[in-house]
Length: 407
Image (tube, rainbow, N blue to C red):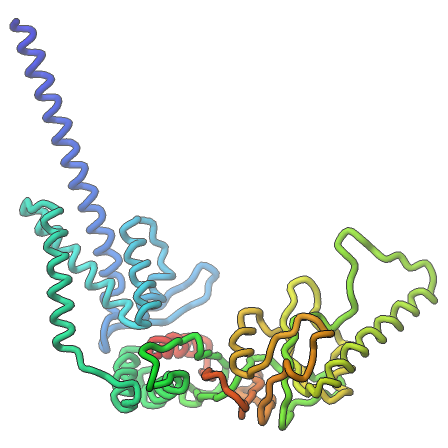
């Protein structure tokens, strides 16, 4: 009996030790989570507000970034702890949803979790803290609604003040008088103030061009390409009364499949191949000219050259301005802006697929930077382009990020 009693006490003590260890483990996990979140918040806390400092980040490939944008800083941090990763995702979600406040939301989350640590140390159960936070959220929403100021999208002055506030803590804060009105005009330009309650920022395309100063940033009611027009054989660089075509097929001779090859055994056969190639390409170029097109935008091809020198030569002779290497993700914006339709085959290239504009011209915006502008679009599809300028890559990138926040 004595042995049995001792064994019972031993098993009871063992069970208590296991429960104690489990509670300690839970406490350690919570503490670890709070410390990780607080570390992320503390890392970007000093960049908050108009007196906040900028961070210099050296990325993996050696490039240097100078910014105080919370989402940008966190996206370049190597974070491994799951809770710290949640704060990075929180910042990214805030950037997508509101565009600004990415630093504030992380600092606020870190501070709340820090206070949770104090409550847990006093013995308050985590469930009770969670329920209390739920009640606080409801109350906070009521308070925010009560202090919120109603704003109309046609109240330009108030919108400029809001955009200026967003820019006041940025590296380019001294240029906020220039950039804030541009941001507001861009938003108003793509919004129907009578109907819309929200703004689709995908209708605003921000294009970066190295050269000049941030004050040279401009709004373009049309399109801007950071590419040169084709200069083959004295090709055009300016076209008034433009009829614009957008093609997704290659203006070059067809190639064999990967597994096949063409064997040429004599010179006459080679000469015949070259003649047929010239004839094939010239036929396509004349088909494009016949539709009335005098400006051609060519989508970039990943399999082979979308256009070769021979095609560019023929198009130049036919007085057609060419802009090549258009990215696939730009096609929808271009179509919406110009009212043209992308054409996947030369046989489908007809006049009704063309867009129109008053002027297409290549202009210089810096010592070695040229852009192509399309202005005076006949039926703009409520889209706007912003050409951002900067004296160097660091300033240019930060101006781009700051404009995104202002928008």
